[in-house]
Image (cartoon, rainbow, N blue to C red; front, top):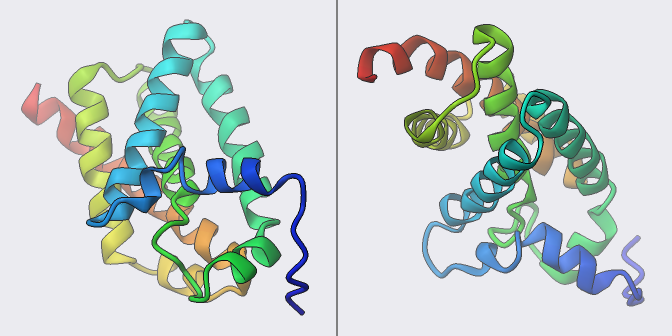
Length: 167
């Protein structure tokens, strides 16, 4: 079902899917790619004071839906099911971590909060606790994207539980 046809949107797809090329890191591409989520989140937090949750939610929803629709592009660009270069899922998962934390606490994370969000998101993205493991098995880009959203929820809750201990 992979057509092999190139599209004028391919450079935009590549840029977003690789988080501006961060996903091409030769080591820990998911961890490096998550930094794109940090940059997006901090930028939106700075640009939208008082509306951070809304800004993060819109960005996460748009990027998640768009990423889920990229199965054909991903299949013809990278041969494996969950290619390391595809890190848009990490970007969205990081945003979900912050959204979850902010909804629970009503607070916006500062530097230590972003560091903790990064740490916990990476932990849960690697661990793949259920139902994240099940979501990972969904076909195409759906499986790539949705397991990280579950990891983001877990990470946001753990950030809420642990941040008061370290600050």
